[in-house]
Amino acid sequence: MMRRPLDIIGASLGLAFIWPLLICIGIATAETLGRPILFRQTRAGRGGRPFVMVKFRTMRALHDPAGRLLPDKLRVTPLGRLLRRTRLDELPELWNILRGDMSFVGPRPLLPETVIAMGEAGQQRGAVRPGLTGWAQVNGNALLNEPDKLALDLWYVAHASLAIDLAILARTFKVILFGERVNAEQVKEAYASHRRWRR
Image 1 (tube, rainbow, N blue to C red):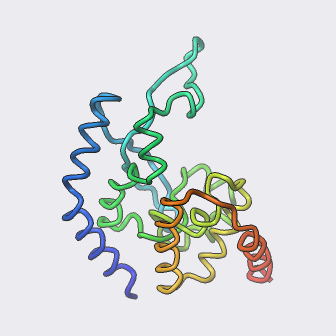
Image 2 (image 1 turned 120 degrees about the horizontal axis):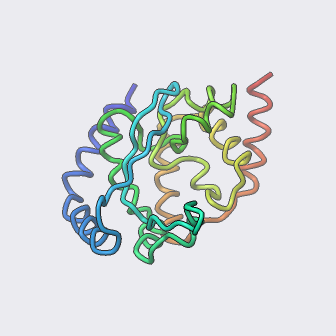
């Protein structure tokens, strides 16, 4: 299958060309958040296999008087918001792609316990490698609820192809430039397709 060789080539070229940008973001992150500059967390990969995902840190470790972490929106720095808005915080995941943990396109990697809680749907979702971007990310992402995201992810698993991957990559750049918008028609189709797939 062509996907894995293309992932290796794309991630290698990406890391080779953007390393100055990675260094600049790393320095800026260290200045605003200190060390470590990378966020590492165990996520579920293809077939549920755990791996350590890496990305740039975007939040401070701020706690309330009881020792609980404050909500994300209170911990994200201005630089962190910029990195998230432009998806630049995800660039270190090129290393995960090169290693084979991830692909450029696929359902976003979730916590293992989140995938387990999905039951059969979580197993179906894990039939492909998680991605740097995906069908849910270009059809609403943070504006969607979790069931909608899952339906879109399952649609992708059932219809994955090189043509769809290229379309998702193109639409990802559009989302970065113009912001996220919910595509209600695609969400509706995802639910309908998932019902047909399960029959």
